[in-house]
Length: 382
Ligand code: PMP
Ligand code: GLN
Image (cartoon, rainbow, N blue to C red; front, side, top):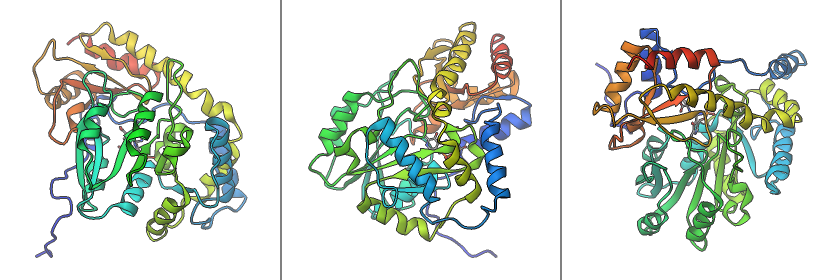
C-alpha cells in the first residue's frame, strides 16, 4: 500500500514534448517535434566552461547569480533596450526559463487569483498557475495570424486578475508582438495592480528585420513585470537549463524568497563562462539571421508538400496547416507521420486546454540542413 496523495495537478499527464520525442526515438523518425538544435553549440563557449572548471570555479556562487554575469546582462539590456537595470536587485540567474516563469508565478499568486494567458500557450503555463491554486483565464489568439484580441482582453479583466502572461516570439506559432501590442498592454495595465509576465526566451530568434519588442523597452510596463530569458535558446545549449529573470526590486525581492529555498544557486562554471562570452555581441546579434536561413530553407522544402505555411517571424518553429487535405485530428496525424513517414512534429492542439484543433502541426527547423531535407523528403510521399 502506498500513501494516497490528493494530486495538485489531477489533469496533468506527460508533456507532449516527451511523448513525441519518445515516439520519434521508438519509430526511428527524424525529430522535428521538441525544440532543440541538432547542430553543435559554440566551441568557444564550451572551452570557456572547461577553463572555468580548471580555474577552480566549482563551488556555489552567489544565490542571485554570479555577479559578473548579472553585470554583463544588465550592460547588454542597456545597449539593446536602453533600460537601466540594477545588477544587485533586479536580476536573478535561474536554472532555465521555465523555472523563472514558475518562480515568478509562485511568488505572486494567491489561491483564486486569475491569470490571463493566450492560447495556444507553452505547455508549462497552465500547470504552473494551477499548482498555485490560481485560475487560468484562456484567451484564444486569432487564427491563423495568432494576434492578440485586445478587445477581448479588456473584457476578460476582473477584480481577480493578477497576472497577464505574454510570449514573444511565440511558441508554438512564431508570431511576434509589435509596438502597438505593447502599448495596448501598457494602456490596459496602467493604474491597475496587474503584473505582467513576459516570456522572451526567443529574444534573439527573430526574423525578417523585425525588432524584438521586449518589455525592457517600456519603462512603465517594466515596473509591473517579470521578464524571463533562457541561455539554452540563445546559445543552442537547451541541456544547460540556465536562464534569468529581470524585474524591478519590489517584485524581484519576492521572487528571490521563493528561489533561495528552491534552487538557491545555479551551475557556477557555466555562469563564469557565459559572463566572458557575453562580451561577444556578434554571437547573439547574428542569431536571427542564422536561424532565419534555416526557416527559409525549410519553408522552401515544404513547398513541395501538401502542407500550407502559417508564416513564422521568430522562435525555432513554423506551423503548417493540413485541413485542406485531411480531416484527421492533429494528434492522430502527428502520430501517423511519426510512425509511417518517419517525421515527428508537435500537434498544436496540445497547447490548448480544450484541445482546440485547427489542423495545424508545429515543426522545429533549428536543425542541420541535411536533417531538414531528410525529414521533408518523407512528406512528399503524403
Ligand atoms: N518558454 C518558452 C516559450 C519555451 O519555448 C521554452 C523552451 N525553451 C521555455 C520557456 C523554457 O526554457 P528553458 O529550457 O530555459 O527552461
Ligand atoms: N521549449 C521546447 C519546445 O517547445 C521544449 C522544452 C521541453 O521539452 N520542455 O519544444
